[in-house]
Amino acid sequence: MRIRAVLWDVDDTLFDYSSADRAGVLGHLETEGLLAGFDSPEQALRAWRGVMEAQYARFLAGEIGFQEQRRARVRAFLGKPFPDAEADAWFGRYLGHFEAAWALFPDAVPALDALTPRYRHGVLSNSSVAMQQRKLRALGVRERFECLVCSDELGHAKPDPRAFLAACEELRLPPRQVAYVGDRPDVDARAADEAGLFGVWVDRTGAGGADGAGVRRIVGLRELTRILE
Image (cartoon, rainbow, N blue to C red):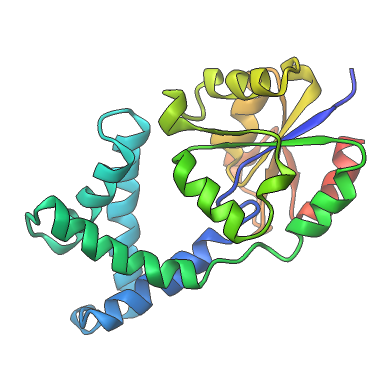
């Protein structure tokens, strides 16, 4: 049966998360007077992202909530047991820098425009509904998606097949009629295939790699129409 809908990942698929996070972290640390404590901006970024990955994994595993993983990131990064209010305030100042750098990838809107006459659209994200609602509205594309399914409310995170199947349920379509597009070959494309969807990996670096063996791969969203057809 033909593909009738496309489910999208958001961060580093439609939205340039990595660039915004880099600008946000470095701008925030500079303002806080902390950047000089690192040998280089790259070292600061590695430290920040290492803490983020560790604490976000706890969120995805259901060990802590979305707001608590933010607080845990602040405490781990700074090595201080901040009270909740102080941790929230510190992270909030980072968000100000981060949100100032928000942008879609240049191929995101053209791809949505090209696909919309033939395909319905939804979002499945390992994030919070509140965060992704705010982001997609700020970027001017929220109305393009029929549904927004996120792991914080769902209780299951990719690559769990239940996450993909729940999003298909929201679209009222069987998995075989739904494509999933994401920036991770394992968590997105391969996991979608294993759940019965049509998984597509957006490899924006063009580097390929062993992790992507056997999955459908594109290097930009302009290729998506060809893959789906």
